[in-house]
Length: 260
Image: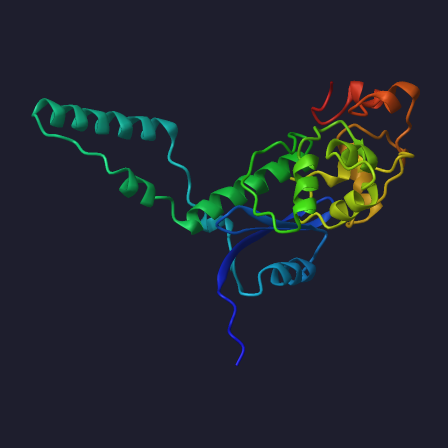
């Protein structure tokens, strides 16, 4: 009899966006997957099951979100604790700090994941409303080959309003002949938006390698001010081609807060 896979809880939520329904999921390690334009989450759940056969899904609802205490309340609480600690020291009571005990009192996984996913949801909503950028620092649960993970980590370095080519990513990894493999890593990127594979284009400026479809890639690059209305392709000029970061002329007056 086959041994059952160990259960691993995967927390998820969904939101509406101009590109369709966006699903996001997290484990106790961090953000696991984002799926764009997946109305019922069929692809989303299937891909998670491939990565985690024993996945047990927990949907997070807005009304279940545990609010973060106001800063003033936390400060007051901290002041009271300081007063108590000071009084004990005055009374000659030795205070022993058990670091192991403190470490063990970490936030419950469901609370931690709720905070992470709702922070991500808020960032994505503001991004699509033109009021923010995809620059949040989130813990990630990356599952893939060493090469794929190295590519995904490199993609995270591309700022909004700039693009790279697959070849330039390969060069930055010290593997100049692996442009095609970089394209494969981009195509299989499990966390689009947070890992901005939409900011990687072909050497001729064409929109290639985006699993969600090139029209979505064009939409996102227009939102970030890289492409102008009516453009479907990056227009390189001589200075663009030799610059390490492939900064675009169009970005000098970017939109959505991405002006450079």
